[in-house]
Image (cartoon, rainbow, N blue to C red; front, side):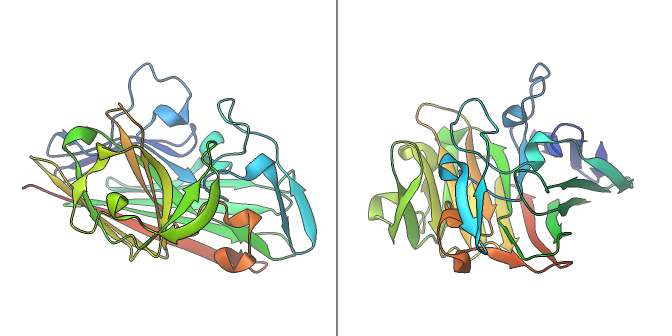
Length: 279
């Protein structure tokens, strides 16, 4: 457990490099992990998405003249989901009272490229900073998508404000079909309650800033090198997700220009800061 002033963070490196809880002034900021959650990362407070985010349709894509076929990695979805970091143990590289750095290495299997991922958590008096990075350890360029998957709660009272000019429309399997201007009914620029309509969509053209407001607290998300924000707000549920990402959903199945392409030996990273305050 990490502590800095009024902020407290509990990590679970062995279970997908996840966050179990993030509290500020005794208030849960992310949805806390239940004691009986077991080994399922989807029940935690936050997990990393790396080396890809969202779904890869049927697990197939091509890159650099190479055809790649990935197996499903979650029983609830026929399409590989959210990469491999969230399903693997991470090792602790170092920790202090208020910060920690953890690492996971993978690849050279179904994912043809070897890579090294790190997360650096830094608690601050008014929030939490997370850097998620990946380094290409292979001999050829590697595509990558990076993202964080935090869960929030009390969706019925959470107002989201964010400039989200475009959205990827989806099919019944939540796979992206086409990018379109965001409909007015889905717009968040002026702020609106998150669960007014169900969403599982990736919004593009994001400026990296989003604000969540409840009657007793605010959370401002500031992300660097994240041009997309995926919103998951299932109908009739108390929880929802606001997920900063470096690339739009389905990018691995489309043009390489939508992805981060990492040269051999090079590193790419995103940084997300969750700033907390009171109303």
